[in-house]
Length: 297
Image (cartoon, rainbow, N blue to C red; front, side, top):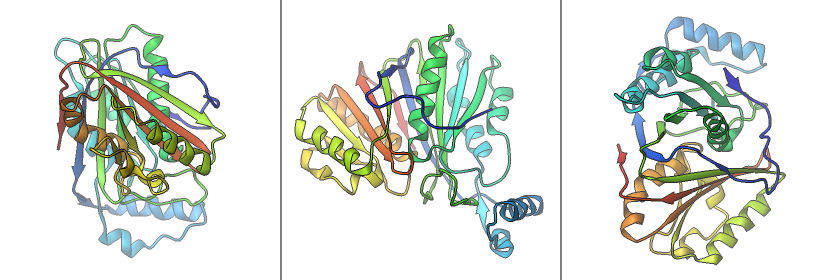
């Protein structure tokens, strides 16, 4: 199942608190993997014709890819728990899969506990924020002890200029945010605000920087960071997410920096990004708790 359509949270709407504590973040980069098989090239060609796009068949025959199914298969062991079966996994990707497969169905069959597993797509850069918002609402209405949101992106894809896709990634990467009743990394809140233009989004980040809260670190999405003086906060308190990772970038930066922020007595990490085509800001606040369990690969 895929969730599409505009975000439902309006400007200034309330935060959605994730009902489970954040237990860990796992982020991994993947090689280009296997070449496209002949059936995959035919599917891409048919899709291109259907959408009026030009597909260079010879180019796809030369290219290689790592599919979303291969990525989630690699992460499946991180999502499983011996004593608390996972109840929900939400995939989030701002760009389509390189080859038509069913990663959410694969996870539902592979993980113990028969979790509900679906995907949120077609919301560009703010897709991960919407996936967290949806997952929080679902977990809050069910008695679940474990859940995850997995953000995915890859370099080999067929782009439709008319779709609400994120910019093309420069790396194959998956980042899993794992929530568990026994989690000790922190508490997470997420908010989506629509009707926010690029200028206003930049002003929001500048205001956060000017505030200079010594207990807060700021992670700014790669594209949004180009319009603000991210270095102004100094001492690693404000960082720009990698520009080549439009969806996984903020969460990759969070995973890389959280241990250092804890050592520097930072209590809160705020992640913010903006999708100009939807005039939507995604903002996520993690109130850090006891010593964290974050792995960065």
